[in-house]
Length: 313
Image 1 (tube, one colour):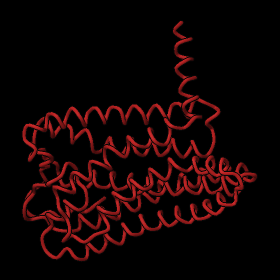
Image 2 (image 1 turned 45 degrees about the horizontal axis):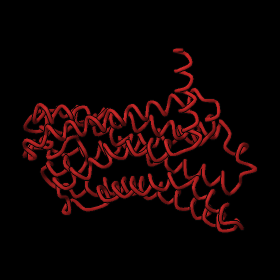
Image 3 (image 1 turned 90 degrees about the vertical axis):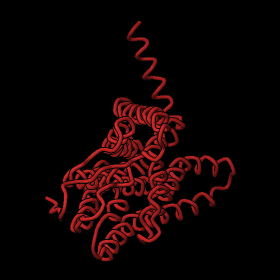
């Protein structure tokens, strides 16, 4: 259990997008639409991969777990944000805020590690294609997925403990739509330098270690692609990595900007808009960029729809 150090009151109040005034209704419609599309797309991708035997490969296994992680991440954040846009500022207890921070941080860290695993999968597929099946065996895949989730939970727990060991005795209004580490840390009273350092170290470990593994994988991939004699062969090899690279750049770009900087550089209103990118846009990006542009997934989707139509007929 997380021991919460509260001193004056029992919780926080989300201000969310209250400064947007009448535009909140428009934001509600926009975010609700994106949220429904995100949940539907990710769940559908999981189901299609599960049902289509042609997609029972390590790459699509990792993709299904990434979609699952992104779905859980959005479920813990977006519904409360949507409710706040309609009902105004919402209260949340210290325990509720700590719980939300733990799960959101855990799923976010898990996504980083899963992206590293997917980079390793592409490395084996391109650099050692003849040994791909033997190396990416079910036991190794299960170990990689399990390690990603366990590591994510441990880092999420660490970040939550670092924040909620502090005392909160000033303002209880969070200029945000969920309990993210920067806005909650900004409300702590007393000396927060040790906690800031702790969050920075944990963030560095998650982002830099996982990104380093991706960078090493792609260094070998690039060397292997450059050795391919034909331009068409190089293009096909690189196309198998393009979607993963797109997601990596957006995911790590937003996360690095949010968490790898000192407290003095926080701008809560600006950061709230940036947070929309990785809580709403990025989870939607995964099924669109990573799956729906993939020919194998497109074929599986067509087969699924064709099967439904034939079943109804």
